[in-house]
Length: 249
Image 1 (cartoon, helix red, strand yellow):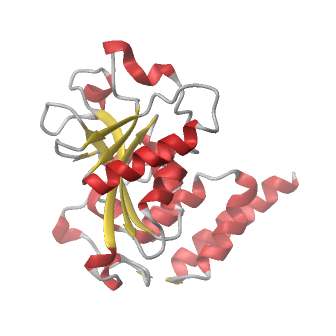
Image 2: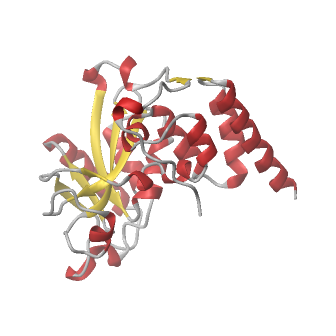
Image 3: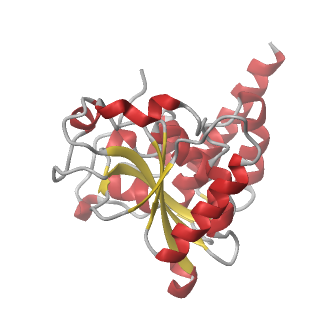
């Protein structure tokens, strides 16, 4: 069982010991776009999108239901009609919506009939929630391209995001990163807002969800891309050493 750090109030949030050189603050707003996807558990889906170059930040949450501010338990028990989903904020100069849709099919089995729910539950489903007409068209075209490669019918729904996206609880944000609580502590990441807004958290979560054989190499490369505090560097170096040692054994 991993350790969840206590949340802080906004006035208690310390300065981050990292330089987020590719964060949203450096990207003109006209180049930032938003997309929402649902594909099985939102933990893995968030990680898959998070490690993409061009994705600035991600957040897990719930959409499509009727209850205001649902809890994970309520959603899981099919009491609200919500679906576990992931919101993606991306730089459209580096990665297109079409590419996001094409990547989406690789994150889960879109032909799994269990996602249909048969009127029982919708908390795990395959869906692309479009925010504008252009997204609907591109999602549909991507679905057709994917369907041509498969011998089973894709059950993924392409539907408008006509309800509010509610952020999931703290422990469901950046799930794989939070399993490494010492790293979170060294980065001063504790509140839901910090995990959602941090570009660093977005990237690290994606890396740490990868196969153990590739985590060490990707982590070392990532460490060269940002300026970190000595404490963060020490924690990451220790993680790399442990991963390499386990691989040798």
